[in-house]
Every structure is written in structure tokens, then in C-alpha cells.
Amino acid sequence: MEMCPHAVVIRPNMEKYKFVSQQIRAIFYDATFVIQPVSLDEAYLDFSNKVRTKNETDYAGTPAAGLADIARRIESQLGITVSIGLSYNKFLAKLASDLEKPRGFSIIGRAEAQAFLAPLSVSKINGVGKVTAQKLFGMGIRTIGQLQKMREIELVSSFGKFGRQLASYAHGHDNRKVIENRPAKSISAETTFSFDKRRSVDLIEAIKPLCERVSKRLIQGNYAGSTIVLKMKTSDFKVLIRNRQLLNPTQKKEIIYENAVNLIEREANGRHFRLIGVGVSDICSANAADPPNLFGTLG
Image 1 (cartoon, helix red, strand yellow):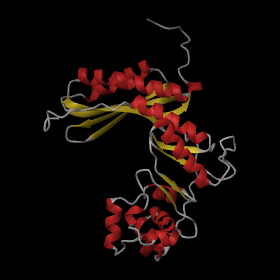
Image 2 (cartoon, rainbow, N blue to C red; image 1 turned 90 degrees about the horizontal axis):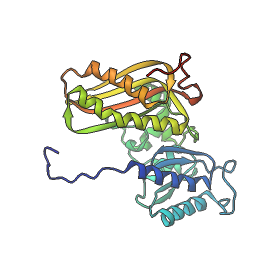
Image 3 (spheres, rainbow, N blue to C red; image 1 turned 90 degrees about the vertical axis):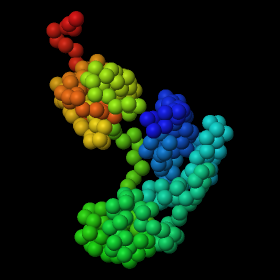
Image 4 (cartoon, one colour; image 1 turned 45 degrees about the vertical axis):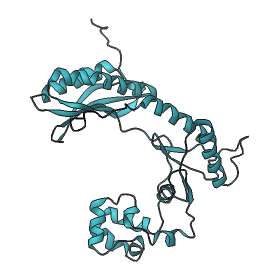
């Protein structure tokens, strides 16, 4: 904002995004019982015969027909276009979904998978970022076809455990299953400041709505957490993570806030911060949350 003071910043409407995402997932559930959300706008669907829904909307046809009908319903009911990738595993389905954006539908079959992959850059493989890609380029490997010619033991010697995954993906193999409602490892919320903050009072004020959001998500998911996590990013982009263990798991915004405040007071020593976040980890069922005080409530 300092470099572009006249810019118009439109705040994202996360509640609206979440609401529409839930509407889309409701359409998914008409077709299959097994859905693994990746983000608000991305998910894996298991379309194998054993889990697909057979109902009046007739999703019992081919997976391609069922997915086409899902795309049609989302566009007609919500006014949103989607891109779809269909294949026999998650790696190839994700790859296919990126081929024809926006409003695309691509299929990679088992018979042609290796031939399709061969001319593609190694950077198309899940987990191959800039560092790994540069290492592969340095080895003279630029295409997936070149990876296909390498033995797994060679890749493992160069890339450790990830070498096995590279070998599998190069040949179109991926044994990961579509997992419905994977348990959360942590729940958090954060905010980036328009201007850096250094006073503890300002930092403490900034976490109030964050604690409320975390508490709300815990309650909605029927979760609780027993470790409070504070995340702070300094003006020179150093990330600080601080934790505090609770005696009992909690869902309460007051308890999250109180412990986060104590952590902030230890760290606010004049440094400038550009981001702050609050979360809980060690997630468990809400059944264990906030046991009553045997001596009553004070205050």
C-alpha cells in the first residue's frame, strides 16, 4: 500500500466463499459418498462403483457422464464454471484438471498414461518444485519420459524417499486413496497488516477476531484442541511460532485469547510485525473439551 497508496483493496468475503463451497459439495454428494476436500475450490471425488450414489438423478452412468452433469448443475445453479480431471488415480486426475482451464474436462486413461506423461516436463509432477526441478535438470532429466527410463534405486539415491514417489508418478502410479473428512491436525486463523505493528496492545487487539474464528470452526467441526499456537511474522519476514500446552482441550474463544495474549506479551519487544495468527493443535473430539470446574465458576 505504501508503494501504491491509491489502490482500491476489496476485502475477500470468506463467509460467502465457504457457503458456496458447501453448496458445491452438496452437489458432489449426490454423485458419490467419498469426497476429499483440498481447499474451498478443489476436491477429489471417488467415482468407483462401490461408493457412487445411485439415485433419481441417474449418476449411475459412466464416471465421465456423472462428472459432466455435476459441472452442468454447478454452472446452472450457482453460476460458477469448473475444471475437471478424470483418471484412475489422484496424481493423474489432478494433472488432467489443469490441462484445459478454465471450464475444461480432460481424461487420462490407464492405457495411454505413460505415453501421455513422457513428453511432459518433470515440473508437472506433484512435489517437484523449483529446487527439485533444478536438481533434475542438472542431472540432464527434463521430461517425465527420461524419468521413466531410470531405475527406482537411482532416484532414491539422489532424492531419498521422494525418489520412490518420483518413480511411481513417472509411470502413472499413485496408491493414495481418496479419504473422506480427513481429521484436522490444527485449526488456525491469521491476518496480514496493512502497516506493521509493534505495540503489544495493537497485536492483542488484532487477535480478538482470530480467536473467535478459531473457536467457531472448532465448534462447527465438533473438535477441541489442547495446544495454543501463536504465529508472528516480522517485518523482515522471519516467522516465529510459539506454543502453550493446556491442561484440558478447549473450544472456548476466551481461553484461546487469554493464552495467546500471554504469548504475545513475551514476544512484543519492539520488533515490527507484519502478520499474526492464532490456532490450536493436538486436535481431539469435543467430548473431551472444557470440563466443568469442580469448585464452580469464579467472577
